[in-house]
Amino acid sequence: MPMAEFTETCAAVVEGIRRVGLFITSDPNTYRVQAITHGVASNPADAQEVAMRDCGEREGGRLTCRLRQQACGAR
Image 1 (cartoon, helix red, strand yellow):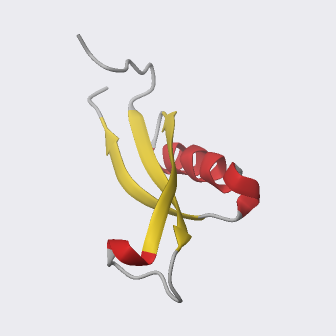
Image 2: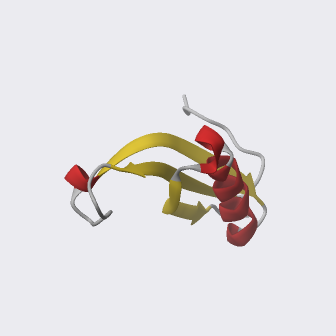
């Protein structure tokens, strides 16, 4: 049984992070993940835009949002 079922062919996952130290680097000790959002659409750009918009609205817009995964299935 699938965990989620989408009617659109593309999905994107974005994480919203907050800085812990002076800078955000690739080291996980420099940031804290505050939100994980997703977007679905008929193309990858729109799926990413939906996920980024949702992330940007979290926590009063104070998160740094970055794309973690994006994929499209067969049509």
